[in-house]
Length: 445
Image (tube, rainbow, N blue to C red):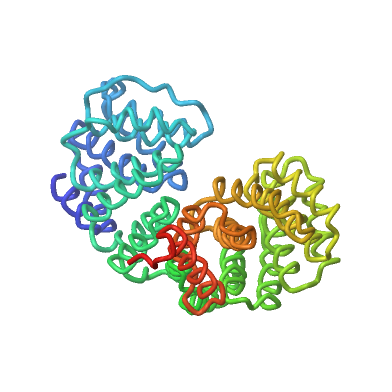
């Protein structure tokens, strides 16, 4: 049976199956029983879809050798089969590496990622065909626990240990984990290393993940090129996906093509699974807002805000504050901005309270709101940049009461303001004037 394991390690699964089946049909019951147990393990590699074959092989192995019922590998595979039947597996302590791996499989299948990890920790001596699967299993457990960075590392380990034919599929999981960990460049690298998978649906996923990486890297046009390839594959399969449509809308929003983004989000909403429908509606509402279709945007946003189960109601309130600000309804803007603050979107809420105060020429009050927005928002974000830019402008209008603050905020904002933006020249002028004041009238180097 060593030859069968060599074939499994090389990814030659059909040949390995034939080799195991040949040994399982041997005339010597003890040898045939062990081979049948290994055949059951082979079926276990394919998951729930091979449960019936797994159970049949276990029953046959036990018939050939009743003492196998106490073997750790047999017991672990039996618990895995129970998990596949929808039963709660009875986990047990074992030092046998293969048994530990299959108990980890069972634990993860029923939603116990910590238990799965405990079985995988310190496992040594697995055959090659299980070693990479153990790393893959560890990655999936870590993903379930929200540890995307560690999951990516484990997926990489699985990728480099696996035979070539399995690598393109592992690269998809690894790239998704890298993207969730905020590492789009790493996602692109692993996708390139894995290459295009040979199956159309997996190829569509490859292009989709490439598009996600490109969009995260600030390349919306490249993202759209990759999405066009993903859509082409999906069209061939007759299986358009929610994720591709949603990402297309997001890429078109980045390019300011709001009508096209709206159309993509409408497709995404039609394709969305029930648990994602509200999120697609939110994206659609923002596209309508940017397109200037305010009545439609308001209707969609208010439907979302009325849903207590929607987890992003604070962002909805901030969007409604922006909508009403564009309509110059300052009272409504203030109301929605306060809702946004109450619901955890403090930076956005403070920003729109600042806008209203500024338009009313209440400069000191506006400045305090912008200061709070800049403090609360992530550096470089839209809210942070607008708050910094406008705070500098107000400080200049107030006669530079604190030149050091003007200089610090102007320099910070310039790092994130495109050179061609009209704000860039204004910020440089404000910074130069602040430097003059700090130097007693002399321009500092």
